Image (tube, rainbow, N blue to C red; front, side, top):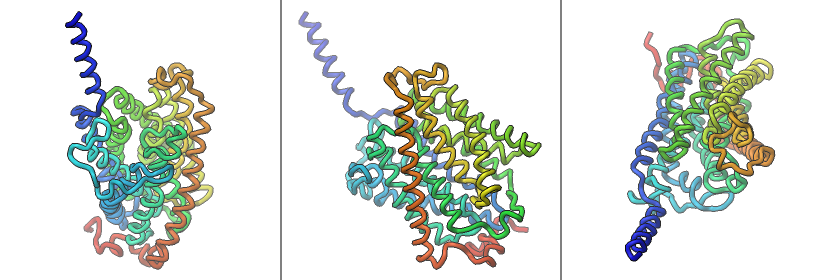
Length: 430
């Protein structure tokens, strides 16, 4: 009996030690990899994807804007961005406890991974979000305006919304479900892009002049990088090397494939031929739409979400460009904004344990789940983020216009191309 009591006491002591946060080598290795994958999405994935879609005279400007935004966002994240997003603060914004990574050492942990790694992983999200908006004002915004707008937008839009959802803010308290950024990344970027397109105006010649992509090979290359990088984006958001990460990766892939095929079918029916541009755009729509749901739904639910993304985002592009004639040049709002909204609402449905094969794979953890109640929460999050982002983005654009004496290049400079006008370089030597 004495030996048994001694064993139980030791076991109890061991379990209490294990309950404390200790570094997990496996989780750390995976999140290191995921962090690199998410940065790979912007540099070079998104850069090449967007670069191929513009005209020859503007390819370098797109690559430059994505690269420069990555640099600016990184420095701001270091100085105070991480602190405002993930500091304790209050319901609306974090505090300044982690300015310049203050108080963060090699031994500091966030869960069971180094806090410096969590800092880096979240930084890659802060990098890609404003970079996504480049596609809305491509070929016509001053480089100085791009930098100032992106920096101010991060501070006034991204950091607060990130805190609301992921930093313990008011949307988190409500129980908002956003596994990897449908609200934080895609809705904010999509709405900011739409407002920017409206404020800056259409490119000269749009919509009567054809402006086809200059290099679809470059675009498809970038699209492939985005697809692979998105595994880090979604599966990495589990912050562990476990079944949640594996299932998030699985549903991400299924939704991307379904979105691609659904978009191609819609295009085939409407225009008579499927296009390469269509299949890669459908892929991005499927990826963006599954993002908020990736940690909560199962494979069959992901299939429905992906198909829905391909159909609805395709219709949104037709509405925005062909009917409303808004020159969101590279379809940021109809793909990312609409996709983020759709996925953020559908997660309330497909996370339910009551849908059988279409339900979330973690159904046992969702006992007592109410689709109606969660849909209400998701709707509040979507509407509030949409309105806040639209209003603040408009104000930032107007303020940036004052600082840079107008955010748009002259008609002559637009005709000449931003590569030469802004950077005195050319993407191709003819």
